[in-house]
Length: 563
Picture 1 (tube, rainbow, N blue to C red):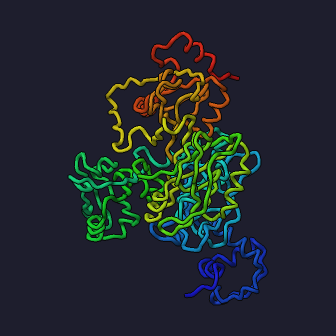
Picture 2: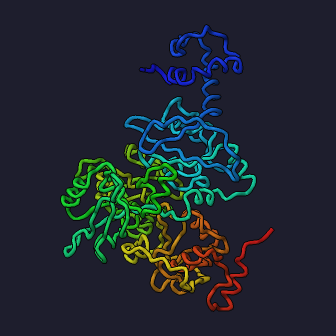
Picture 3: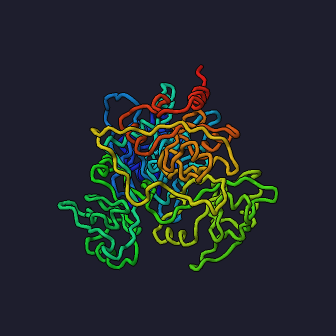
């Protein structure tokens, strides 16, 4: 049967309930026809019908999207036993070309978090099971409840055409907040103890062993493929592990390909290939939650290009670079950085000649004209944040069908460029080996006290998109950072006595600036940090190695006041 509208469809599905709803909603009585779908729309009060739909959808039915199906199935919800704790819901949204997600995201004055409003009738959001007033916790497994509104909107924008939204209804959210529940931990628990994120691995062909892995079908499971990397080969170095399931290869979903087609893709690739993989146990977590595995959810430390988010402070003669609108070799029009002045804020901020400007203060520049971008930089006042990357990086992500802004890395600077080499993570190729539970690790916890010198504090901070924690990405030789005992790869736990484990790099920078010319950092080596967290051991000052008396005094003074 062809339905002219969403209302027609609802009438046909719910005709047995409609007349009982008349009395509840006080809808004027209509003669009962043979088929409710034949009742003229003009004979009904539209507002009453909307109320009927709302009553039916909220009291009689729940939406349960089936994996791989855009339009969710409607399921009658029976009486359920009350459960302890708030009930999280996963809503999977997929929009087609030219279609919107069909919701507005709002913030409420004086309150943390983000609330859904004005859902489009029968739109993508409503079909996924979202309701007006729902509160947003995660977008594609990134926790966003404590993030700024513009940052959340940006993340939604760069995620592409598919979103997995973890939500709570308004009442449950308010109750959880009033009870002091940790919403981040609640979301983490929803994934399960065995969950680990998928990995986006960029494999560069080696002369001796090629790509260094094979792909075989999983026996008895159609559309699933397993990987087997060569020990020490290119794939293993990129992060592929034995038994990983292949989800995505060079922009194509593996489940939509035959083994023969995948083999041809591998043979035809030139020097490199990008794959999305996940271990079989973690894959079960996604199947249980009825959600797809998407590149924006992945760890991506082996990707060859990562846009850098640079923080610049205005100098007496401006920022010290030119911006031009140019065409790349692929014919794409971009905003290109040119003529970076030596010794300028731009050079000190790690701005590089010939890179493409992707964002100004988190706002994408792709659709903006040259004058608009220049004005946004000028209107930023004394500080501006620019996101840049080489033009070949932009072309790389375009071919994969991904936004490069998914993989931004925050960079802090303060020393001349010729002395600096920005590092994304201490180990790019070989994933860190997790210590076994029965192996005792002695974490190298240190309180490092610094006084600002001619090159600043002499270290850089770094972070990886979608992964919590700030780390020391580089230490300047002979600088205050090295003298204090800072090491490349150290995880920053506290800044001037303030815990920063869950804060963004921008917030950590503010803590550093507040301290003026003095700074104390509580840090621990990465392996030790992971061991402490895995074994749920606190990182305290009393775990410090032997320190000087001066350091002990500073640590006491730096402890936050208690109320």
